[in-house]
Image (tube, rainbow, N blue to C red; front, top):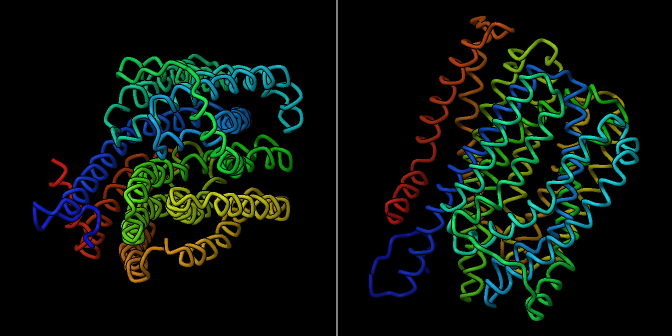
Length: 499
């Protein structure tokens, strides 16, 4: 059986043509979504740099606490229903209208509760000054709920190009608002207002882009969505709590200043995950769903192997570069020196969760939602336990707790995937690990040479950091290509097929 993305050997073979078409769409979708994330998440990187330069550790910690709380609320309002739009065999428009009604209705209720309870929530998290920030960001919930339905419609058809305006456009405008307000001395409020602007603009720009969804109700669609929510919804909530539980626990155990130190490192370490792993996952889920709907489940493990390889090489490669340059954080000010070891630890964690993200997509697409919920719940219990056990020794140990929890999950998930006939081929996995390790070792050697050469990376060392970054990126690109030539050539061939 031909693998998804291979060029058709016989143009009269409908299965080959369908596989090539799906592979071409997946390749194009990944490139468009990568470009969109480069714009939207790139703007967040700029915001992080600006805020780190203008805000104190405590101010950055306060807004991080508020943002993490609202992120959890956003997932509660979604409850995993957007995936059902990609999977359903029903009329997707009827499903989208029903999901919009469900999500917006729930988000309005959550917003009211969060706004009313903001002072209590902030105090419980050990950051009472974050209450007004929680109120501001809570107003974003209904808008992000509606925008999410529009995004789901684009994902179903792998039409990621249309996401450019609502996703990247709203993010860039929100980032601009944040930077301007921060420069005018509005402190932590600048990011909260920027987040609200981004959320409000997303559904507006989505409508301009041509994705028009009017909330409605279809009883059959509602039943299917609610059945999906019953398992995937709690798993999505657990997943988001898993990602955000560290901020409030660190705030409670160490205080807002340490949250600020941790937050800067986490924001940097989050970039490869959100820009690459999540992008590939967003493309992978509808690809897997298409294969399962077509009854071609036997082709899935090979496709999982391809996505695993891409995740390790792309996301893992970016983590290698970030780890080699972690010391560069001090160019933002020596007060961020404590963030350097935190960032190093979080890079290891980032590679682990990028793989988990990749593998969870096929588990969910296969309908093994119970397994997904179990894995996420176990991960959350492990992480909370590790955070309570380690964080008291210092903020670096909070990052170590992340590594330990993820390291326990990785082999367990892989073994279960193998039993469910969903795991990537072992040979492909081994080649992917080796394909990352070879350029990673070379980059580490180059970075060590820079340290021995005494390149200045202190508060005035922007030029040294930029030069080192360019050299390391070029090194990884060249060595990475040589170590993964066959995979890179295969990608280029599928890219040609997408044109």
